[in-house]
Image 1 (cartoon, rainbow, N blue to C red):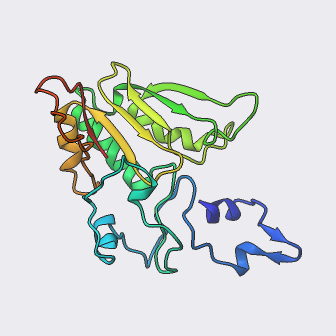
Image 2 (spheres, rainbow, N blue to C red; image 1 turned 30 degrees about the horizontal axis):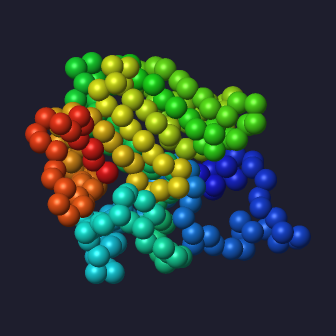
Length: 219
């Protein structure tokens, strides 16, 4: 995303006479929407990356989903880390496709998209943006000229509220809530990586009886 903005004429980051975009390499986690870095790069899954550290994508996770689930510190120069606060291009497309395959009208299903304050650019007069349109048109929000969106929507959900997607601004994961049939499609998608998490129950406390849990959630 940064390289594309520079190519389009954006001002480089300067400290004195030093062009930071030319002289430095950022090894931290990017913020916002990122696309395929191009030739010479191949996708590294979370499962494969965590396995290098002797960790598993599936935990055990004893805390609620949050920053503790993800590696901390700098990343190797040979790895472009996933962004915080946004799905990347490939994951965004894959998740939309999985949801569209669940809907009778496919990508034409009506949905809402909410852009929170930071993804919307922190305009003090207009902190929150809510859009309505077909599922298949979601990517066009990132191409708008009137708003400089650098993140996929913070929340997006179907008009009938049968599913809900949330990407936290400070995390490298997206939460999907919806019917079991939809969650199964997402779990079985060959591209998407998912984690199911159930909050550990305090000792002596029983789990809810079948039918008492209103939705299945997938991370």
